[in-house]
Structures are given as structure tokens and as C-alpha cells.
Length: 328
Image 1: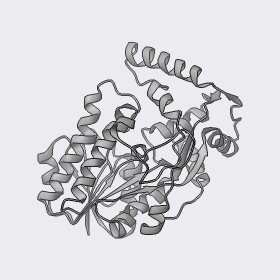
Image 2 (image 1 turned 60 degrees about the vertical axis):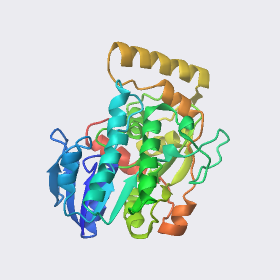
Image 3 (image 1 turned 135 degrees about the horizontal axis):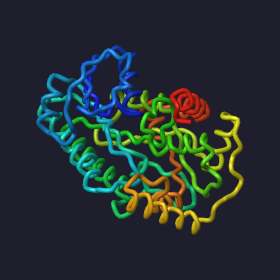
Image 4 (image 1 turned 30 degrees about the vertical axis):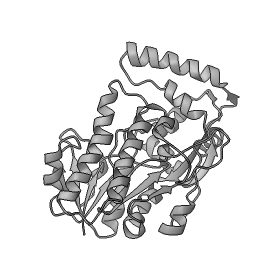
């Protein structure tokens, strides 16, 4: 099987690629001319230079491939030019699906996000059937991923075999950027977490999440979406676990929402608009935090054979990797 993977140089994509390699798949990986190839070290794979926003390069790079794993995404909670995020996440997905159609690809596994689910403030876990619309999406990342997911779902119900997976919050090693989730770990290790807010995340082991992508290829239904999740935890519980793993104190002060919102507004204004660098805290991130992003993976358990496991091992590997690679 010749598998085409977008986003293979990134965090989750590199793990999907390695699981495919372990299972004997031949690999063709889309990389940009400027991509950091560190996450591909030791892999036996063909690379094809192209860009999600260049449909001709995608169509050429995908020629002869049987399956596609579209993992690439612009994952940031703040962006200076929002149009750039929509070009990558929405138009890039449209171009991948069109290239797959023209190349008669057998199946596309589209990586969406749990961010597209319908969350509530009462902490009740969301699932694939939770009521949600574009109007519920806070920020450009969520909006762009929701719009991209709609394209994938429509394609999957319109003749192509397209299966959508919705990872919750992957954690583990090789988070080279790092992602917003990885920055939580790095900031904690750097002792930049003097206080916490009342919010919650579902943490999933990135290795297990990668295996879930292959299960979606093998067992997923076209036009359907599957939450690949792990452990529902409050932010305080996550920080306590990191403290126990890293041997560092966990913050004891809970920051009221108003102060967190004000801090995000100040950081976004000074760092983002004046200093023109990505802020550590944003208004959108604080607004997202008002709802616990807890989720249920029952559907994936029933249909894909998914197993929900503790996040502790993944957090430990993340701490060890960030320390070993000089992030903290």
C-alpha cells in the first residue's frame, strides 16, 4: 500500500507516518521547501515537495497513491493574518480532496479536531452527535477546522470514501513546534504557570491517536467522524500530574475568569499587535476555556476498536522529550 501523508513533519503527522511504516506501508510524504525534517529522521520514505495551497503540486505528488492521510493543519490560537489560516485549513483540504478524486484514491482519512464538537459549560462530555454549528466556533482555528470538516464529510457522503477523525488534545514526544498543548508542558517546566484557570481538556496519547487513524482507514464508515480521545482532566489535574512527573510544584492559585480575560487582552495587544509576535495568552483561548473540552470516544470504541487509556504515560514522554531537546 502506497500511503500519501500531509503534515508528516509535524507532531501528530509524524506519529501517523511512523505507525504506517511499522505496518509495512510504502510512504510518500508531502513536504514544503522550508519544512523542518527533524521528525522524519530514521524513516524510509519518499518525499514530494509541494504545498496544500498549490493544487497542481498536490495532484502530481499524490499520483499512484492508494490512500491519503490528510493530517496537516495550521494549528495556532492566534494568527496575524487570519486569511492565511483559512487558505491552509479550508482551501488546503479542498485541494487535497480534489487531488484524491482525480487520482482515484481508495480512501482519504481526514484529520479534523475535537474543537469542531458542541461543548457546554456544564462539563458534560461532547460526542459526534452534540448539537453544533459554525456560529459556535470561537476563533479562526476552530472556524477553519469546522469548515474543512464539512468539506470532508460532504465528500464522504457524495461518492468518495472519506473518513474523518477528531483527535482531542494529543500529547507526547516530537512536538517540535510546539503546539499550544505542548506549550502548556513547556511553560510548566519553565515555571511560567503561577496560577491556573478553571477549565478542562481531554488528553490523548499521540501514539494511540496515530493508531486510531489507521483503524479509521480499515474500519471507519465514509462520511462519518470519530472522536479519538483519552482522559478527561481539569487543567489543575493536568498540572498536578506534570508536577509529580517533573518534580516541580503545581500552582495553587486559581485565577478568576475576569483576570484571565484581561491578561489575554493585554498580552494579545502588546505581544501580538505591538511586538508582532505570537502571544502566550489570547482572548480566544480564554473564551474557549469557559467550556471544558471533555469528550466521549464511545463511537470510536464501538466501530473502530478504539481503547481509551490514561494520559500519564504520554505526559511523561512529553516531559522527557522537551527536556532532552532543550525546550526546558
